[in-house]
Length: 356
Image (cartoon, rainbow, N blue to C red; front, side, top):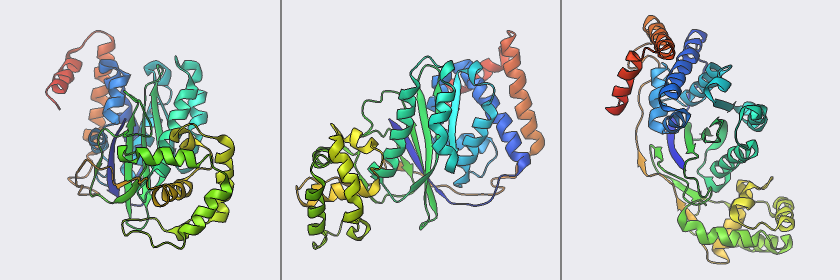
């Protein structure tokens, strides 16, 4: 299931080196603490929760409402866990920009430590990115993708897209637990500041459209291109956010030829095809709705929202000495647990039961 979405304002600049070095250490100790006491799967559940992730970023001392929190917190966790992956059974791949495209290779590089097929993990990484770029077209272009997994094959995804017009970023969280279908209602909870009008091909209401689009992808390209040319003369209903001027029938012809040759058995296979992107999906959804009467959902998949506030020193500047003491305390707690002294760990577990 996809566990959440958070909308965050775009902010520029770099994290101070003194802060990032501490973030790596604290992220490592917190992750280690949770894995030792509650297991890797519990850590995945926590970090895939958008509220917990936001709190995690605050605890690490980063700006609590900016888009940079996502990339910096994930980067700190990845760097902090380097060298401990085999010991903990917890692995992190991906990152911002070009690093995100190296995720499959990074997953494969850890294959010797896994008790599962790395191919399944690589597929999960790719299809979740495809869903959030092509199946849910909400105006945010993905630029960050982190994949976190265990040696047994459980995983979560944290990825973020940017809307340069509104100057907001949207973060997407996924968790592998109980996944039955990547392309039908994969959401568990979605958090954002507002709803918009989006093409939502993973909504239950889009089920008929998904079936028609899969059937259309098996049609000869010339037939589909003819339909697109016909649609260019139509006056689209006001609810459409799709502009036909964005879809060039001649250029999309090559993609339709690939889908025709592939003869996809279902929408997930179609979505996962190389080259099938937002424009291909929009073109097929238009034909599905206006020619065959099968409408996809145009509702933003938001279930509840929250607002963010404060930045750069709010609610107060980072206290470096306190930060360092926190890292040291966690280190000593973990060490004492390993030698049999569980007093500090048990105190934290009591807080966990109380909901903190």
